[in-house]
Image 1 (cartoon, one colour):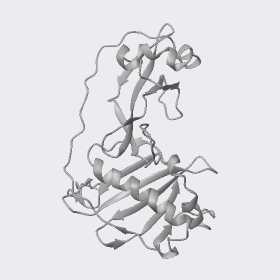
Image 2 (image 1 turned 120 degrees about the vertical axis):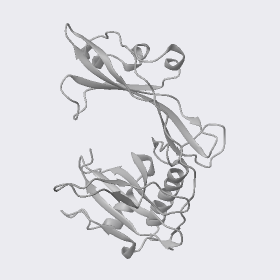
Image 3 (image 1 turned 45 degrees about the vertical axis):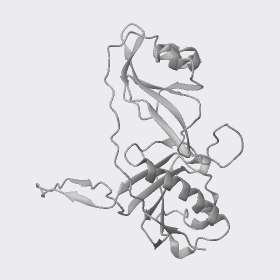
Length: 260
């Protein structure tokens, strides 16, 4: 069995922007991290939104700049009414203040996480894959990629992906059983699915530098899909890529790497 991929033509939709505002002092980093995040949600969100929050986390990430830490809150899963399940996330960058206080340094734009809706009975929206940040520019192409990814993994489990369809570009023995690794991916572990164009626009060379940008995907043009999964045996990430090209047989590329 071989999969054929079809490229979709959809309109480009710009992502909305949000303006910042003055912030009041908050308790210290230690107090916030030690507390139940749901007890602190009122410090971050309006009451009508805070009532809907189901989970939260306040922590110092390993990539945090000195004097900063993070908070994230997540709302309930809801039906996107377009074949998807969605849930809102609210992220905040916090910074320490003198005198044992902190404040919100940046309120990042609210973002939907999205996944294809599983075909199950009942009114509850059940996600067929892990929920990933919604691609506001190419939502239809992203949904296509999510559904295709689930099909790819199912096909690999039954031996339907041939060795000539999968290129593994990782050393240290990680590619010894690349097809087995692909088949073992759990769609619910998915952390990211990106869509981007294949073309580039490059400016003139200045010294040793040449700036290039990815060209937007045009109507009916092929595009690249990139999915990411955590590696269960390390702190690294598996990156799985393929081109959605009308009528072309599936050709996958896998790489285990550290992605920041």
